[in-house]
Length: 406
Image 1 (tube, rainbow, N blue to C red):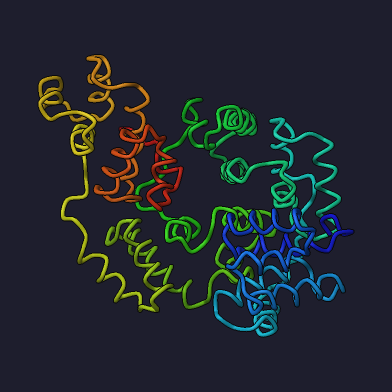
Image 2 (image 1 turned 45 degrees about the vertical axis):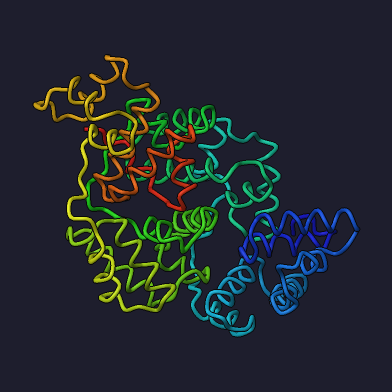
């Protein structure tokens, strides 16, 4: 196990991976534990946000993992399911073991992911060796181990997984994958932005919405859970839906609703952000898919499309008078509009890029026109990046949908 000599380390991993408390509560509990020399379980309960009842499944899971009765990843998935479905740990464990499908695929430690991470010098051989040893001990995939040990951040890990996916789809070469990941690490940007800056980004088709994107946009899985599931999907040859079921993150009923919503997006009946809103209603309020779809379409704005100039005006980045005096009404290309405004000294290059990213997200239906205005307004007023503004507004938007500027 992770630092197996310390029982609290195992409990910490269960708490952190199962997302049973928020990060701040956990950090406070760790500080209390260290300051007062208390076991982590007592420190969590002393924090005031964690009851004895909440602790029971964690301690039951910890005991079974220590006794080698179940694997750590199985324990984590059962805790998640118990929390999600409001059932006790043993019932959740039974359900997880029933749902879990054995795979004959044994992921190699030397695979596309570790090769790219090593070649891009995101990790070194020593880090790889330690992670490989812990992966063998815990049966947790090596990428997840690297995140747990702090050798790689979650955002960079997602970029590495995306590089593997694009490599397998033959959308990029191995050299491009390595160079893009290097650039992503150096500049703290996502893989898609790195590829865009390298001139290697390929625009995805409008109307495509992956299950992973839908779940993340709906707020039903965290960034960490997304990365964990993507790695399992890539290296254990399972569908993302099956992984969600096995991880205790989704039920069959929820996945069936997701398929309906994805079909509606593909058929241009729903925007991606509307599908995400409907997904939340289905998951949180137990709505039928048809009812949720009707709810979100009733409150949608008539015209969602927005040109760059209008977006800048509505966000109060520029005045209408300034835009209309500078840009001819005959110019329709967002890039040309932006270049004209940039050449006139009315907008900075960084603000222009933020506006173009927002406009791209609207084009793909990942955010609404109103949300784009709020994001860009926040960028201007608070001097934020697009990513910071999106997070601050409680939104999530696929990174691959932010770089279509034509």
